[in-house]
Amino acid sequence: MTKFSFEININASTEKVFGYLSKLENHPHFSTGIRKVEHLGENRYRFHTGPENLEEFQAEISKIVENQQVSMKSSDKESPMDEMGFDLSNAEGATTRVVQWFEIDLPKESDEAKDLSLRVREDLQNLKYLLED
Image (cartoon, rainbow, N blue to C red; front, side, top):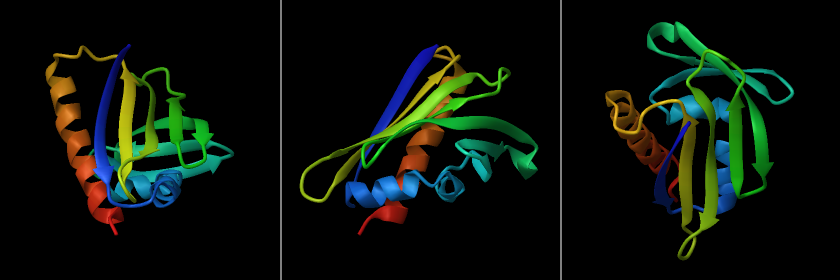
């Protein structure tokens, strides 16, 4: 597994950012790769991806630390992603540093990794736009 991480500072409180990210149903609003999220019960979710929601994967929340972390682990054996999450910390003033990370079966220098990097950077910019005060 390869670990990728990306970070951004958002001019919003950690409480606001955590509140938004911990509701996984919000993820299609900022993530270009996720079209829809279905809550399956307890901590389990189905993520619809790809054109017309034809692809999907299931994950469950593996860790939640109030105002600090939300992470989830894939429950699909076919998925190249093992685990992903968001780590939050206070930056200067009322700014929150968001680190989005993935543990995924993907060579770091592959075209797929480059595409993932571009998409996640765009997603974090979308998140910033949605949440900044």
